[in-house]
Amino acid sequence: MTGKLFVVATPIGNLKDITFRAIETLKTVALIACEDTRHTKKLLSHYGIGTPTTSYFEYNKIQKGEYLLKFLKEGKDVALVSDSGTPGISDPGFNIIRLAIENGISVTVIPGPSAIVAGLVLSGMPTDSFVFEGFLSQKPGRRRNELKALCGEKRTIVVYESPHRILKTLKDILDIMGDRDIAICREVTKVFEEALRMKTSEALEHFTKNEPRGEFIVVIKGAE
Image (cartoon, rainbow, N blue to C red):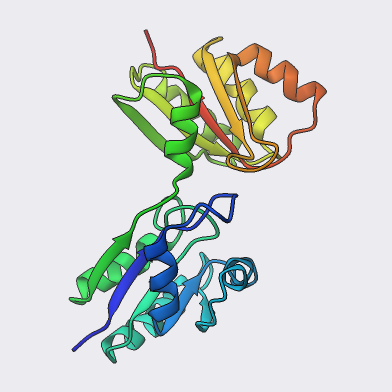
């Protein structure tokens, strides 16, 4: 009998944002696969969880995926966590989930926090239909092409961005999509949570004057 892969959502900032079921699962599985073991151990230590951990991230996902698959085939349960939020969304978790499914391993999810949903709800924009694009390309030309492809999109658009690229991305949005309504959420669930709702030009001016900090969820109003 094979083990089971548990896809476990973890807090996106506030350590209290975790379910009882997630804590119970992390305590009872044989192994926890993490993007960054040092980051995850802060959470585990907070809740007194002593389960062994192993790293599973973008640059070792092939080799470590086979290791985790072997572990599961031996009948041992594994929990997959990301640094924050729900694994498999804009992270390498998708690969091990897919690998487990292809090999007949049972997969289940322990739902919880998601930065996409948190940012979308905070934005105050229509939530009945939206499109999530993850992180736009780091390459300027490709990023601009991605935005051009979204120009006619009528649904609310959600993207992630880093503090190092937010100004370039906002400028590209302004140049390509026009001065649309936009919401920029950062430090969500943390002490300095911020949700700015303004025009793209105003957001660009704001972060030109104020150094961008933290990871960003950018929500863009769909085309009229």
